[in-house]
Structures are given as C-alpha cells and as structure tokens.
Image 1: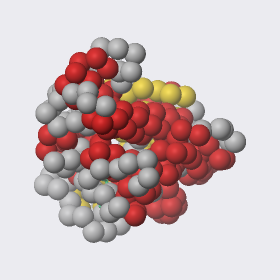
Image 2 (image 1 turned 30 degrees about the vertical axis):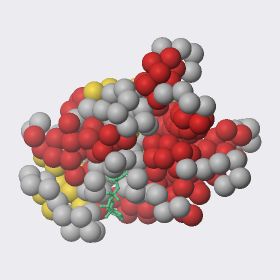
Image 3 (image 1 turned 180 degrees about the vertical axis):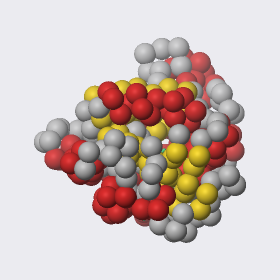
Length: 291
Ligand code: NAD
C-alpha cells in the first residue's frame, strides 16, 4: 500500500519502520522529528497524504489531530482511509470522523496499548472505532504493527475503550501501591503479600504482570528504578481524558476522578511525570495519614 505517516515521534517512527520492513511504500511528515530510514520525507502533512491508500497519524492530542485532519483530508484520494492511532478525546475523534466521512473518506480511531516497546516489536494492541469496511482496509496494517486489533464499533469507540481500560489501570495501580505500603507498615513481607494477592481475589494486571514492588514477581519498571515503561505523565493524560469524557456524558466515576487527582499531584506537584506510573509505591511508602 501507499501510506502517509504523520507524526514520527517515539511511537510513530518505529510503527512506520515496521510498515517499510513489510514492503509498504511510506511517506512521512513531522515538523520536528526526523524521518526514519526507509520513510520518504514529505514537506507537509498534505504532501504525505496525497495519493495515499491509508494515512496514519500518531500525534500528541486532539487539538493537533483536528488541525492535521483539516489539512490532510482535502489532499486525500476518495475512498482512502484516515487511521488515527493517537490517544485523543472521544469528541475530537468523532469530529474528525464526520469531517472525513463528509469528504468521502474512511476514518478509524485506533489508539494503542503496548508503548514504545510494542511499537518497535510490532506487538501493539489496537482498539478500533469506525466502519467495518475501513477496518478491513486497515487490517493488514494492524497485523504488521500489532498483535491484536479489536473492532469496538462506531467512530470514537476505540478512544472510549482506551480511556475506560486506562481508568481501571490507574485505579488498580494506586490500590496495589497503597496496599503494599500498608502491608509494609503491618509487618507483612512484600513476597508474602504478592504470593497471596496474585493468586487471590485482589489480583490484577497491576499486581500480577506489572508488580510495582522491586524484586517481586516478574521483571517490571520497578526493577529498573521506575524508568518507564508507561510514564506517569501519560497515565495522567489518559485519566484526564476519561474524566473529560465522563463529564460530557454525565457518568459518575469517583475512583477515576480520585486517580486523576493523585496522578496530578504526583506529576505536577511532586515532579514525577517522567517516572513509571508504578512509582506510586515509593510515594506511598514515605507517606503517613498526616502527610
Ligand atoms: P511524541 O511526542 O514522541 O510524538 C508525537 C509527534 O507528533 C512528535 O514528533 C511531534 O513533532 C509530532 N507532531 C506534532 N504536531 C504535528 C503536526 N502538526 N504534524 C505532524 N506531526 C506533528 O509522542 P508519542 O509517545 O509518539 O505518542 C503519540 C501518541 O501515542 C500520543 O497520543 C500518546 O498518548 C499515544 N501513546 C503513547 C504511548 C507511549 O508509550 N509513548 C503509549 C500509548 C499511546
């Protein structure tokens, strides 16, 4: 396929490289990041999108997505698909979908989980909203860039799935970290705590697969001084998107709201945005009910 790739940052560059390695013809644009080897450099987003069968975007936020979409949609060929893999607010995804549809184009919102490691290894999971037809067009690309693509329904539903998943993740990580800190103070060893909880009803991905305690369970960022992994600043971004969406539809999400508050403190007041999001454990370790 002829592919335009817009946004070649930490995630976009390795995704584009995997498409080139699979034999696709990829033209890229990013105002600040260099084009990786094998990706032809365009002078603008519109140039990268011209004559492409699929235009992939991997951008920081919904405002930038909307402005890129307004630029590239008129340059795209009728019937082509705009595949946005960024994590953005549901409203922006749906607004861009409507703009694409009005121009006779397909649109998919397909945020990912798996981080930069998954982007490099081609093992991302895509959560996809949009038409079945557009999904079928993009399927071979999902197979190259990822290990799984779930079609979640209409446009915006990929973003909805992503923020609901990450709201659960933020809440369970905080609960796991505060429970470890409580166990420490009660004299319960972390090893015993892990052995019990990971095989009992408190188990979760945060405990079992991404244990925040160093030296316990599988290898995780905790074993590498909390180098991300998944940075706390990105968790905060996703928690804020989930709260923004909850407000839009008047959903009551008290635990998600509290998780957003705690990650705001952690990232903004405590300056820990570049640490892995599981570094909440050393944070709770040093705190008391008074501090
Ligand atoms: P990044 O900041 O490394 O890359 C974004 C790129 O977009 C930058 O290179 C920037 O120059 C480029 N850009 C900005 N404005 C542009 C424009 N008008 N035209 C073209 N390019 C433009 O961010 P990233 O880590 O690659 O993340 C990209 C998206 O993926 C975000 O929405 C993020 O939330 C999501 N995501 C990231 C991770 C992760 O672990 N990094 C994991 C899952 C999802």
